[in-house]
Length: 221
Image 1 (cartoon, rainbow, N blue to C red):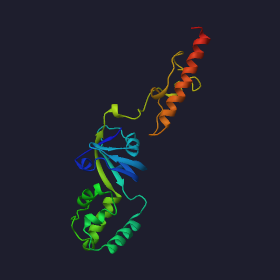
Image 2 (image 1 turned 180 degrees about the vertical axis):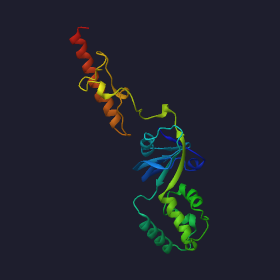
Image 3 (image 1 turned 30 degrees about the horizontal axis):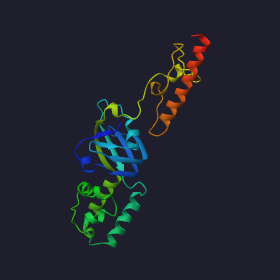
Image 4 (image 1 turned 120 degrees about the vertical axis):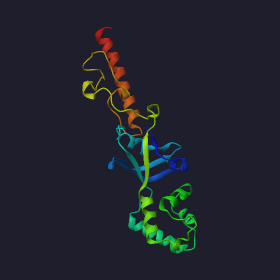
């Protein structure tokens, strides 16, 4: 499912889509997920392929969750700092908010200035080393506190179900209850977003249909 964020941050970034970022999810400070790809800010929080996949690793009991986004995943800190210093040298008198537009999507500029605690109108050649460090940390680890999941009706796929060991993989018939066939999400088979879940639905549905027809014929029902 998509994830609800705590606070008003994501509302400010609503509609912003990010590509080639790395998303890390933390449960009580322990990393439970990390992947590179695409995600989206919404009015309620976070969505998109990375977020949907990350949500599968949470149990949503009483734990605390945080999503941390690496907005510059292609650059390590050394190369990111070099990029910042190069851009500063090319436009030393630029206001900080204009400078940021060369590094980030425009919608993220005011949010990042606030995160880095740097005045938007500050000339970039006046940035201190500490301010530059805060900017890099904010871009490499943009944290979003998670309030919880969206309702299950918004889920892309559900986990859990009938154990695969209790089902004949050739016919999809129950090993415990002859004449009972299973397919799709009723089985304990699920994967990340993409074609995997659809493929499982089609394949098990076809196998169950053929298996049921054969069972009916063989049993003379």
